[in-house]
Length: 221
Ligand code: E4P
Image 1 (cartoon, helix red, strand yellow):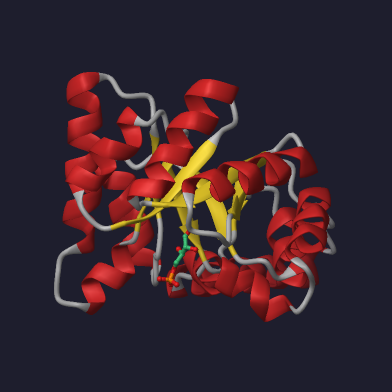
Image 2 (cartoon, rainbow, N blue to C red):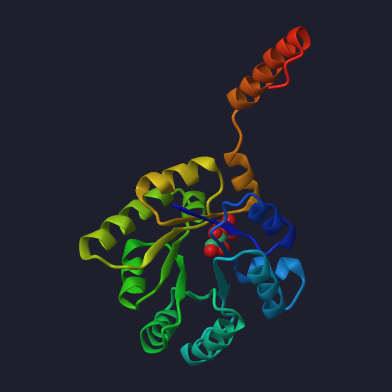
C-alpha cells in the first residue's frame, strides 16, 4: 500500500519525506487554508518537497468552472492530481478531464460504494472514501473500503482506492488488509506507526549488553 501524507504543512512534509517512505500528498481546502498561503503557491512548494502524486482540490462547484480550475491546477506541476467532490458536477468534470483531456483526477468526499462506482465510471485515477468521518457517525468506515475494493475487482476498474480520513494506526493496518491501494494520513498517525514498546525495550537491552562487552574486552565491533 502506498503511503500519502494528508497535510499541507511544509515542516511535516519535509520530516515525512526525509524518512524516505512518502509516496504522495493529499490536500483539501481546509488543510491549505490552515497554512495561510494562496493555494497555488502552497501546492507548488509541496511539489518541491515530495516527488509523488499531489492532490489539489478545486474550490468551485459548477462543472464548467471545475473543469477550468482543474486545468489550471494540472498546469502547476506534472505530479498534480485534480481533486473533485463526488457531486453530479464533480463527476461530470471528472469524466471531461480524465477521459477527454487525460488529466488525472481524485474524486473525494466518497461515503458509499455506489458513489465509488460512479467515480470509476467517470475514469477517476483515485477515489477517496472517508473512513474516520463514517466512524464518527456510527457507520463502519472500513466496510466501505472493503466493498469498494471488491466492486472494483469484480469489474477490473483501474481507479485506485485511496483510503482517507484515517485517524489512527488501526485504520492504516485495516486499509492495507482490505486491499486499499493507498492510505493517506495526518503526520501524527504516520509517526505513531513507528511505535512499539518492545522495539524500544529490545534496543535498550541490545545496547546495554553490547556496552558491557565493550567495557570488558575493549571490542569496537
Ligand atoms: C482526504 O483526502 C481528506 O483530506 C482527509 O483524509 C479528510 O480527513 P478528516 O476527516 O480527518 O478531515
